[in-house]
View 1 (tube, protein in one colour):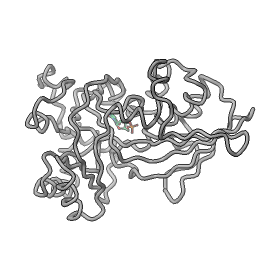
View 2 (cartoon, rainbow, N blue to C red; view 1 turned 135 degrees about the vertical axis):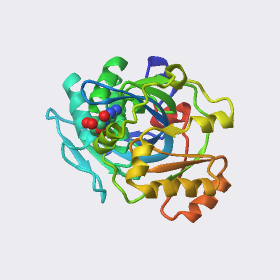
View 3 (cartoon, protein in one colour; view 1 turned 90 degrees about the vertical axis):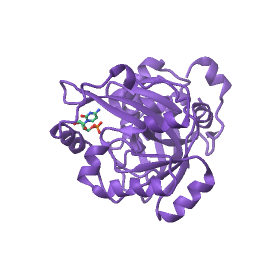
Length: 316
Ligand code: C5P
């Protein structure tokens, strides 16, 4: 997001055109994330929990097509196809446009077509990713009028997971997960996502976490600030962990069974992402992944996206 990277990475997958007349069109991938590691480290006065988490971007993505038309009136419309996500101001894409407009008045009306592939409310960060992608799209349109620190402030206001999507690759999140630090990309893995037909409510999972008295204050905090790239496969596997998983599995034992199944099918590690309900399994190669995917109908095959690929494909 600085001048150099911007010039180095002009839009690639991003398609910018001027047809029809007066309309700028920009198509961007909006990638999913998993939390390779999510430790709950404390409870804040405002009721939120502090986290120590490692985010990883995945190749699984929605596609957002922005059509910008010069207009003195600020207006955002959304076409989400058959997806059940909201199309009004409840959608994080609309909220991202409004938040951007408050800081830098937009001179275009915006129409966004959303091709949804990331399952909603699953822990894969779909809504947050769409918001981050929208902030990037608007920044590209106006040649980055809001400095990085301001853009991150907007992202944070939109949601704790949104800032990560301004980085991509592997990143370390603290505070509510919204304070992001880039770390070296973790070794590439193939990923199988299993989405049980269960909706985990994030507030309920955190409430139950408190009720179960799971806050591990006595942890060795030096050890949990996991900003190092794992040196070996063994270390990698030992770092895959999610404190919220104990709650999710106690409420929905089926999720425990999915984890066991993934391990039986050759996954080297598995965990719930975010507050659930998606479970991911990590595989070393595509053949193993394909064999496992065959055994679990409806599962989604994907892979890690490192920071370089993330930036190149979004074009920033
Ligand atoms: O981030 P989001 O608004 O989806 O969070 C919903 C609820 O989950 C919060 O109101 C809070 O109760 C809980 N939460 C939390 N700590 C976090 C994230 C969410 O306690 N880091």
